[in-house]
Length: 167
Image 1: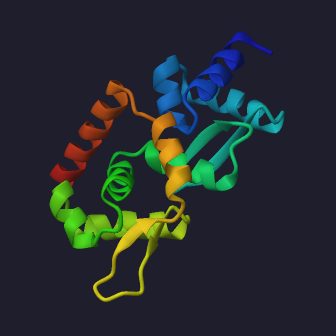
Image 2: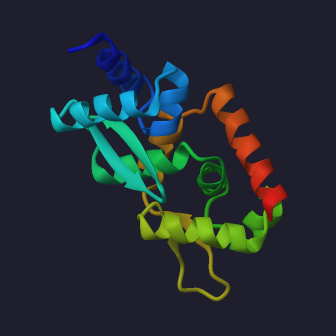
């Protein structure tokens, strides 16, 4: 295995759920070079690729599909904040999440819809509706395992700021 491919594989093992653009930045690799090696790693079964909401995330083998999706959401700032609040506070109404996270209700609704569609969060049938974690114990384990680095948080903040300016 080439040194570049080993570096990519090692980074994926260190940061499960890392997305392709982050890998390129972390390892200072050109997009084409990174794509070539990722394709080889996935074809050879060394890593698993998971497409989720417009990004491809990469994992070492051993994570089940639910864990891969949950980890991918934990690598993104707003879904991570929603998951963390539901973990800390228990069942919560969407309007409370919007207020506490200082986000528009439509933003919360979009992220919650994705989290529900992928089995990470569930909605109650009650009126008013509440949200809760579908797998609270497994989610707690993943929260401990997937803590974003300072650079990850800064990039998330920058993207969020730019998105607000474009609205």
